[in-house]
Length: 312
Image (tube, rainbow, N blue to C red):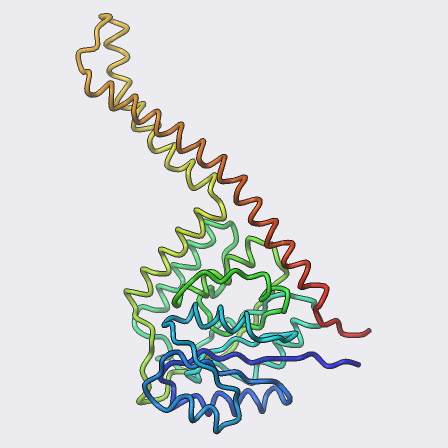
């Protein structure tokens, strides 16, 4: 029986204290896997330590996790991709189960749902923020994930090769989640322990900056993936405001034949025109979004023909 080619891909920046442990743990959990560490402008010995630990090390000079993941997916050829962080917060022992679930179930995404191994694994406010983002994503896209910001995922080749990867930073996890929802791909979730960062290491995640970036990414993806409801919401807002402002003017005109509040009438008319234009934009862009979705589907099907299949 043919063996699946498994690649462990690790974006890193200034993870000298933890990267060797990550490489050792995943090599022990997945014997025979290829481990790729992408150094994203580290100022410490991350590259040297990773290379000494036996990983294939490459550098990505453009800052941001999204750019690193985009390059990883373009360069690496495998049947299953294990995406994890270089900070040793994810449980490598769960990787074999996640890979087997992906291959045996012919799935495209298996997400590691983070369960805290210790009570301080999440930084202050991050647990509540993660839940809020999960709820908001469910409202916007119709399906609520358990942990949309998890950095621990196993992905199929067809997912990776059809994923456009437009994000630049930590909003890449949002884009991964939305891509799976948009394409209606078969997915699964596995609960895994989530550890605190080792003492002396610092997170590259900025709570407020990256939180706002994630919100911005969700709004952008909602506009691009579901333009009709996005622009229809603006159309409804403009129309409702225009009707409220124009109702009094219309009643006065019917009663007197005069339009004494001309600025209000002009404003109400402009708002109704904006409502019509917004709705028309939604209809047009909905057709564009359908075409983009079909193009991604074709890329997905093309990659599917090259995917690993376990023999019965």
